[in-house]
Length: 118
Image (cartoon, rainbow, N blue to C red):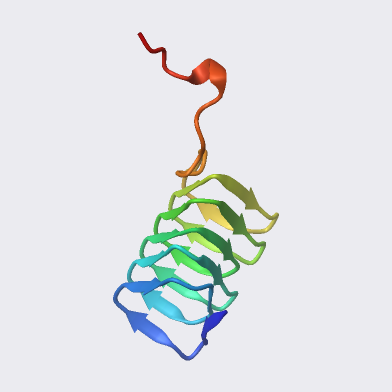
């Protein structure tokens, strides 16, 4: 797992392809195909688009994940969340809308939902 410590501040977009623990500050968009953990002291101001995320810190911006979004009790989120699965612990602050939808790589729809062919 990669690690950005509390002493790291990034102004600009952050892109990564291996699991990341973010404990610093990012002012810009975050994009990855890997899991992301946003630590308790972390601050993100920008959109987050990743495979999965566990949030314990502060996020100001919309969050889109292909799999699971887990919000811990210490988290503050000001923005919308779109995820395949979404959980939020008591005590977390969430100001926005959430949308739970199947993962983008979902297999064929159930038989009764398949389009008819001629």
